[in-house]
Image 1: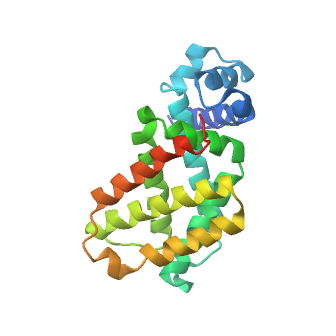
Image 2: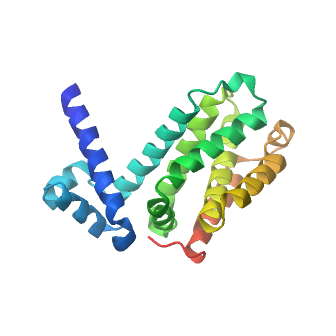
Length: 216
């Protein structure tokens, strides 16, 4: 079973690598999956065994790759030596840098997830990214703060990454610092913020990406 799992993971990674090479011309689409499969000598039917949801599965693979890369980059950093705000700043920058290593694919990825049919997937992937960073930062909250923190960080990641794609690193870092200053105080988290309300705001921000020049 382990060998089969390793083979599947390795083949998924190869399909993602191949897809990234085609994303600029094909966008995040079924045609992208087909092109990646051809590069590896697979039929569409064979590719569908690994990627039953096609481009949606590729989107999840890319997010997890970037999550893993960010956490690997953070591995040399001791979060306990940093104040909580600095932990989140360092973590967010690591995650954004990981995404920018595949800039074109990330841009198309965001446009794809901004489509109405894919927004739920986008929210789940952003949540997972934020959860990984909070766990690295040492968060142990189990009450409502657990959820509020992750939705707030997911929103910060989304808005900062969108700005990084549209502008430059300095502008994105200024935005990140401003967002952290405005929402990353524990006093505000304890002030009645509801995760569902913030999740709605996050969904609205994701939807607005469709009108900011991002395309699947």
